[in-house]
Image (cartoon, rainbow, N blue to C red; front, side, top):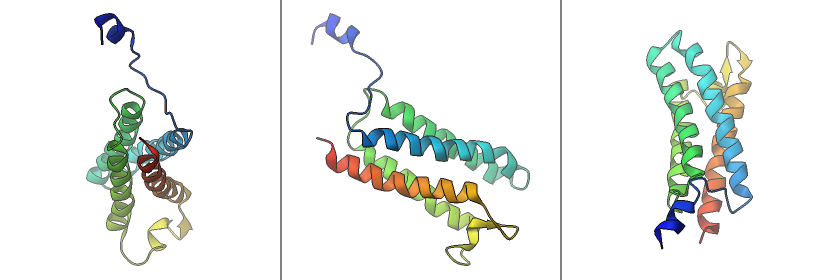
Length: 135
């Protein structure tokens, strides 16, 4: 590759597969929810609040990386693993009383938790699909 060709390459690389846009949307949803909840959670647990913020930043950073020419097929597996660990951490920190109980706070369904966890499960599935569909 010549120097002039390298300098004209774009730093941004849009998803080739339309499902990639779904992955971005899902990561935005769970990332924003974690960033919004981080300061609230910090009111009762500084450590957990910081973890929420770092998790939200992790999803946003993943989106940025995905939209660059640095993205590689193997990173779909990293994205799936990251989302899966985040999903499982919810139950670790939320309690193991049952699958449904961590989704409730004060006797009411926590819709932000439901949406964030649904997005993370879907990220796992979408990332696995994109990994298998990538060349």
